[in-house]
Length: 316
Image 1 (cartoon, rainbow, N blue to C red):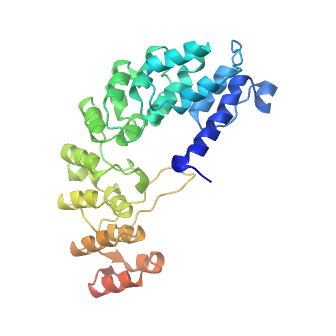
Image 2 (tube, rainbow, N blue to C red):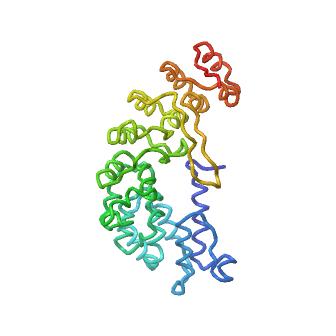
Image 3 (cartoon, rainbow, N blue to C red):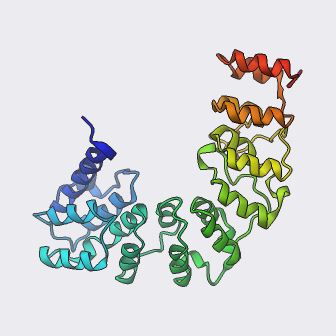
């Protein structure tokens, strides 16, 4: 039976990771240090440590398990005391702990790791790991002071997607920080290609105040907000003058995945199952194409009847 909060998955993950500190290696590593694809940078960093020629296996990993499992609440002093008691070199944990601290949203521990020599040259990897919606500019101030990704010496680097996209998810104060330090985008298009990555209304308000409504045209922001059921963002954009009947040009430039087709606001609201939002859009003149009704609204006959009655269907 699963425990509340997914504790079983977390425990099992670290059990499988920490066994490498005891000297256990994958077959691929034994044959010639070929990397295993972990999909997790903490695990990858630990792998680098245990495969180094200087590494001495750790027989008792209890302290390491305590450290990684409680990284959300630990500070630098806690780490120093724990490592000193267990006689484990600091170099064995700094780099993976940096990623853990970022993922857990523990700024003090993140700062400790950097102060004690953790490498931040990995760039986007680290930025992507910082806890989404942190809305805490201390992370950005610290990285900026260290000229992370040359943000300080080349402010234009803040505008590149590898900086902009992660900061987009960090909250309105972080977005204001980004704008203040020179970040910019000519338009919102390609900022978001799926509803799950749409920033919340307070962040959208910051962009609206700074760039104006034209910045959002043909971006899918309104439509993704409808799919997500984010009434606050929808109202914000519609009251600013957004076109509820905008047809968005397909998004995405990855040839492997193909284009991302975005429906009209009314279509996206119903696909997302947000009836209140659907009715709000109807009241503001939103319409859909007949082909969308036929192809995407199975089991929604009540809504189909409603838009038929109010004349909100356009013939193709």
